[in-house]
Image (cartoon, rainbow, N blue to C red):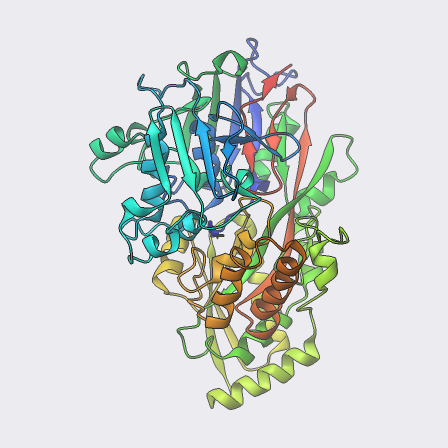
Length: 542
């Protein structure tokens, strides 16, 4: 499903740096009260509205302050959050009934079942234009509601009473708990949201928390904010930190300097920094389901040509890129679904291994596709624009691609455009680009979370790809194939091939990893392989 680039997108946790709040020369690297840490992030928050986010940094921030029915534990399993106990499930496995814990919002209001109903309807409502709207297709009438064919009140979500939430599904969904850990399924206080008159989530003053922290000092565009312990949180006694201070940086070296001066307990590493510290005793690499990819605009003449898209997809050295630009444990990706994300229910084989390499670096084939593209377009020379965010790693990425393409595809000129992430997402949504580079992290561990983002009007379908056969295939995953795990799996393998190999909707570049140096004094920080990337809920300073 979407995200966020979404969807998308998500973006890399690699720029984050956790630092204790003491002085820069404090060798302990922590404040004396052991209750505060500093975090340096590589990207800004775009929104705090769980119905509107489409990037990783926004999702991470929302996840610190709002809690849903489920949480994610250290083993990436869904565990009870605001759900008081496991749901009652009907015999046909389509109706789930939840009891909500006795919990409060930061303003003292009780968290109710209606907070979930309101939030879920908001995501599905076509007036919201949520990048995550297709995720509500899991509910009865979800697809018809988001497409404006039925009223929002017909969505299969209902508040039986203040403490009882009933979810009616379109079809049996064995991965429902995993799905509901996602940011689009976090509750919102209807009264508070409406009081903001369309400005909900645009600053720390216009968002309401019910989770372990509240957010302070974010003005909607700024590069700093704080997560303060939420005194009304139902499990406040379990939260060890009083404050997490965040400062956005775009220079990874600044984080390394914090670590070297004992002012940082956790430092994200990329590129040459990761290579330099790889043998350090405090160096760690954690594989992620984050992918880096290139999206092609189907609505423009040049990139609407499938042969040009294939030429670009095969025309750059992925291994050279991960080795020289990232150097953080990331590896080339030759398909859409990353390694280690999902396994065949029949033989337990990894999805990526089973479906093989769908698009690899191959200059000979790239040149042949390039030749055919020029013939069909009636041009010997082409100029395309490559759009990316303005982070350090994104700039290096597009410069690498520019050099590879202009070298391997003679006659192609690549113009690079770097803008802040928020602006890049706006340009993607508006279709104002030829090719863009982005990253994306899935919400939960099922391949459909990747695949349904590219149905017609899908949440991260920035290329504006539309294929009836593909749409039908994705729909079958949750309908006639829902009760046949192996047939469903085979369909997902075929759908990935259609996206990447046949239609070249996008070009996979790499599968990410989080490389970092960790001071043993900081404990309990959760780094997730997919969904939100980080949680401070269990963090503490020893």
